[in-house]
Amino acid sequence: MPQIALVPRPRSVEVQDAPPFVLDEATTVVVEPRPELIQIAVLAADLLGRVGEQAIQVRYRDAGERGVLLLRLTDELPAGEEAYRLTVRADRVDVEARSSAGLMRGVVTLRQLLVRDRAGRTAAPAVRIEDSPRYAWRGLSVDVARHFFTVEELKVVIGVMAHYKLNVLHLHLTDDQGWRLHIPSRPNLTRLSASTAVDGDPGGFYSPSDFAALVQYAGARGIRVVPEIDVPGHVNAATHAYGELTPSGEPTDAYTGIEVGFSFLTADLPATTPFLQAVFGDVAAVSPDAYIHIGGDEVLTMAPEEYASLVATASQAVRSSGRQVVGWQEIAHTPLEPGTVVQFWDPRVDSAPFVEAAKAGAKFLMSPGSKAYLDMKYDASTELGLEWAGHIELRDSYDWDPATLIEGMPPEAVIGVEAAVWTETLRDLPSLMSMLLPRLAAVAEVAWTAQELRDWDDFSDRVAGQAAFWDRLGLRWYPSPQVEWR
Ligand code: TNX
Image (tube, rainbow, N blue to C red; front, side, top):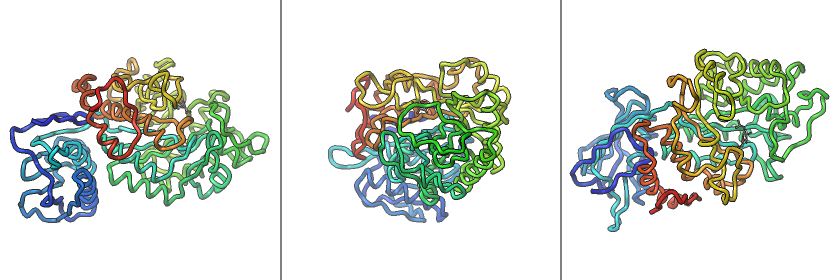
């Protein structure tokens, strides 16, 4: 019987003692003719056709022949927008879910099951899978500010995220070194601060239509895009573009180093509140997601009262656009509206204020630096990356439980898990990928798979099978010595 090596591991897999499904010229994807289903069917035909190196047609009617891949919406599955059931038989495959995002999760599972054998046949074993995620928020945060990544490059990242059932792409769009989203009401941000990046490398920015294209590409794969505008620190790109944001009225110099914590907004300047309102209003106009990230990290120069007042102004601007606030863990030291998402990243601090914030209605997104910061070096010999949170080998990124990370945190306050990749040392896509793979697959399983189904030895065996996929896509990856790659 063929080995089943799925990442992330599904909730239930029943292998049948029956012949496999073989992808051949007869294979067609069948859906009802509804726009969101046609979109997912075309995507499924493309993704699966690439495994078999053949074109697959999409049809609207199940003629009952062999070779049918049926994608069907149903309310019969257990609760959860992303739950799916996948039934593979010799003559047909059924993917059932409550939403198109759920169908997408089933399609990528099928894609992982399809393997080319030595005879050149592409086949999936007969199997019945029922699956649903542990956490609703399974993200990757990408820093496009320190180094810029184009829409085309981010599409590659999105493809890998979808393959591991991640559903949130968080974009760190602004920092001291560059501003990456055009803001129509403050055009100097991109006119004066988009061309810079760390070390004098080339910058860039997304126009509103670039951003819309990204949102559409991600959305088709069941992935939301959460934009981050980092305030009130990490703002040198803003103070360089608009001198009215500094106490002297003079613009700051452009910055291409990698220090943090030196830049700041000033609460009692007349330009500051209108700036925050205009920027977050314009972000809301291009970003359809329910959440906007206000940053809030590493402000080392400001009195707590001024910090709290600037966080409140940014939060109000986000909420008056009808969106919910996400912020780095430091915002938990300010009064928060219930439902605010606090992104935990630095375990070196006292956890009591986080537990208090959770009890007052905040949700927690877990991105512990020592597990989920995929810009950390794997070991001392890793060429790229940073080391402030330690080295993170593959097993370190796998062996942790988001529910018990913060002592005393009520488990229901944890909304999910997010990996983060900061790009001070990562100037191109191969460098970025070499840090993400294989660790992104590990964090994706932390976020998707129930804790009692997770086991390092079992994971390391399954993840070994993923290398063929990365190689086929031409992605650079790190051959961790903790895995017997095959
Ligand atoms: C901390 S994490 C930062 C970033 C750096 C990163 C490098 C966080 C909220 N702030 O500004 O890029 O470390 O690992």
